[in-house]
Amino acid sequence: MKKVAFYTLGCKLNYAETSTISRMFENKGYLKVGFEDRPDIFIINTCSVTDNADKKCKKIVKEAKKISPDSFIAIIGCYAQLKPQEIAEIKGVDAVLGAAEKFRLIELLDGFAAAQETKILASEIKEATAFNNAFSMHDRTRTFLKVQDGCNYGCAFCTIPLARGKSRSDAIANILASAREIAGTDVKEVVLTGVNIGDFGIQEGKRQEKFIDLVKELDRVEGIERFRISSIEPNLLNNEVIDYVSQSQRFVPHFHIPLQSGSNTILRKMGRRYLRELYEDRVNKIKALMPHCCIGVDVIVGFPGETEENFLETYRFLNELPVSYLHVFTYSERANTRAAEMDGVVPMKVRSQRSKMLRILSEKKRREFYEENLGKTFKVLFEDDVEDGKMHGFTENYIRVSAKYDPILINEIKEVTLMEINEKGTMDVSEPEFRYEVH
Image (cartoon, rainbow, N blue to C red; front, side, top):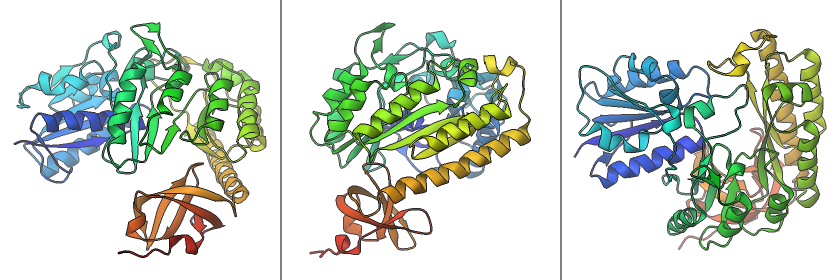
């Protein structure tokens, strides 16, 4: 029985796919082990969005070879699709598989016997047309369920269409089957993931279904207490979805909505499909129906041509919006993107300064959001996340709370009152909620 270990870089979608691939190995008789357990095979799932993808990949390969010098190392994921030849030159790599091949790696690598030359099995991205169902199953409290893949948008800064191909989705019937399978486990919360999940419904190049229909059907699945929508484009987050979530018993009041810039000039240069006015309308609509809703924002600083005034437009726009936190990305050049050829390169020092300003703003926004919810009662899903005698969990509206450790609470949803913000920026909850007798 060969031992196999997995390492994942990047997004929740990558984690869902790694988890599914690991189950494929287990079903074929392989033994899944930890990274440090001297495995015979390492599968490394890579990302192209994070900076220094090449350095991270090299470091992981080097560590793998230290642990198990005779192991077989296969690299999959977005970086593998974009730069297979570059990866093949990394010492210790035995195989590189692209987007169309990664779910067939057991079949394609037959026995995982090392050869003198690195195998490159990476078709052109136009060959990645199949939708491969995936969901994670290793986190007992939460599962990431893939419902969509690829993207048709082609934003100026983004390599994802080059790494994952065109937008495509699973059928609602298949997703419901996966959700029911998940419901038969201990999992309490399902996070819907994809590259552009609001574009859900395209099968074999044609739109067959709609995202709102998926939401309505999942809301009827018994045995899952929470559904959470991951990042969704503002132009695809329509009033119908917002209205439905506001009344749903299972879909939680939490949206993560990419903005990227608060300047219409920069949004147009980026090739985004909305302007700031639409974004503001979506946020205000959500808050009108769900005042306690958590709203996260993606924003990019230092895009080519971003002047000081453009950046300050973004800062002021976000400062005035009732959003809850920011994910701040410092723009970095990506080969084969339109942005990489644009004039008006922003110096790295300026990019760093702007990034720091927005990260400070994010801390302010999160604290304001937490303060707005002090004294209110929510339901917390407690996780196996213990630090300094405290356990942690998240409310339905994504407030991280801490409470005195009690093993009986792990993977339980309990009603709590948010009492104060502690020095680590999480909510302390009222002690009486956690006095239990263990029989």
